[in-house]
Length: 279
Ligand SMILES: C[S@@+](CC[C@H](N)C(=O)[O-])C[C@H]1O[C@@H](n2cnc3c(N)ncnc32)[C@H](O)[C@@H]1O
Image (cartoon, rainbow, N blue to C red; front, side, top):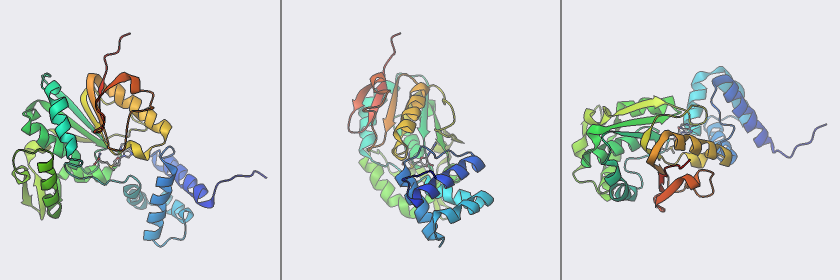
């Protein structure tokens, strides 16, 4: 009889992850195991199921249950001008270089519900770069993208976002960039028109395009080391030479295979610049 050291919860999680992959094609097999298990446990508790195993047939037979679970496991927490100090560094150390390009391609990989690309859109407007910028904002999660496309956010969050906008060095008032409608704050069309939201899976989809700036914050932390390395290779291939890569506060290129391909622009803000490769 084969022996295994896996706990029951690990076995159930692996089976669920395989079921999701086989049924829906979403590949979570290389995500951080502990985080995945915690997300499954939370979902199980919220549904009064007894264990993760009970979730497997429900996910297999109901697309609705799967999408609700997906919303939980992809962790869509985000906000406008998140980590506002980052924008100071961007303004001082990156923007002068970006201003030398006639046209800018920016990619927000793992954009969640859109607050991050809208912040970038507003930031680029204030830096007088928006008109020559195209922002691509992608995520694996359809529901998050659907919300992102509306550009409508809870009005109660705007006060906090406004504070962050000022901490980020915003030059006007955040309320200049949205109107209050439909019981929420709707970002003005001028900012939405510069962003293309689309579905893209960093695990299985290919290189996006020639980008001058890639922002991929708070996504790699959920991946295993090997998956993180694969995704970093994809981001590197999507950057033009001398393009900039921005990661989240708790992410880094240190000890990754692509590290030698970058110069550090700002160590603490996790901003890197791709070197020109000499062949
Ligand atoms: C915590 S949010 C980060 C949002 C935003 N970047 C920020 O820092 O505020 C992580 C996002 O990564 C997305 N994500 C997870 N796995 C992904 C994948 N394989 N491909 C694309 N996006 C993914 C999730 O759906 C989620 O919206």
